Length: 481
Image 1 (cartoon, rainbow, N blue to C red):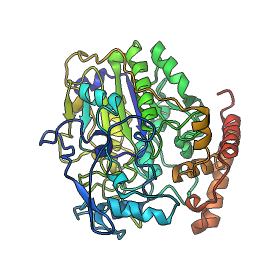
Image 2: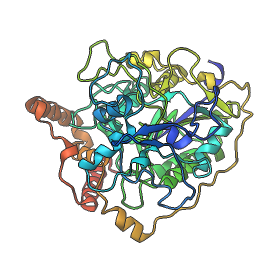
Image 3: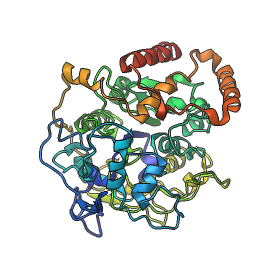
Image 4: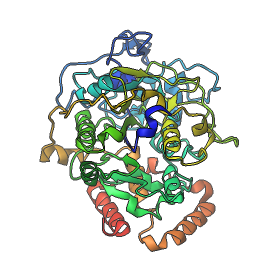
């Protein structure tokens, strides 16, 4: 286990919808040691013209909001990005990674606006994202960490929490209740004191998991994370969700076209909080992204072990998703580490499950996927916590003005935001009625079967009103929170 047994606190921050190349492709020069961008990678557009990867100087709002139209991220979109066709591909087929631009251009028929073909081939320089770049260079970056599945947010986040997407390849249609056993439940079942907390900003996506509705004390607002870190009272496992909506402030999830600098500020705040706390030598911080969100990456994702022996349709989850950034931070990590799994199975989101199970003795795997997933012990090779890292990190300055916030509230919400607003109407309104609510949801699911509402096609909503209603529902559920 190496230094993994010296870790008392695992902290995971999962951001949104960025590929490895888009955030870290130029972290180091491309080599056998680091599989980044050479600068010559390209994709053809609908006219057959090659569109090369690119970046531009600047750190203003426009420069830090590329792509400025949300790329496609449905399962069929990702198939097209990987293989050039939406048709289901044999998991043994090697993706060509040639369909990103064409798929991006095709989104113009789904949503108004200009889909400049070059935007999906954009990447940020280390100078534009100095926080994640500094952490990657100071500690460890994995250039072989894949999203768990080549599809949307909910399936990939489900894999992180449960080891499976339960056969659901998109966020919607909704299939409540999502009752897959979670890694959080393992802490509860084993009676581990101070086992976990989920720190959130607005609407926690983890509330989709009905198995967590019986332990609402585990959900806390993000501000409490700073306090727990400062006092050295973080739980064994902390999971942090970013702000998804333009409400009290702009989103800091980095989901295109949200301003990337705000996510950098969140990363810095998380790092600074644990770095200044008394438990820093015993803390393992992991920063990653749920999926690539349609942003270009040049490395083909390999076949993967399906989570269950029972096949699912239309996708058996037998292929990883596109590479995403993964930064592993601990004083037991050698500076400048580029981390790859020691065996034939690469890192994916279920590597976090494997790490948690192995460190805290949480029992058997949750699925066949996390049973095979390598843990992160190979990153923790120093005998002593000698890599202290910087005392403090400062992100680039950016603050939304009242007019910026008002303008953001008028932008059509994305698929993830729609699904989260729908989530808020499906959770129980009373912590004492969880069992009855789950029973009712199961009965409703049996009655509707394939008539489940598809939130992707739902009409546009009044964002301020919808968030206010969602906050009211969450307030009733969380009570004293």
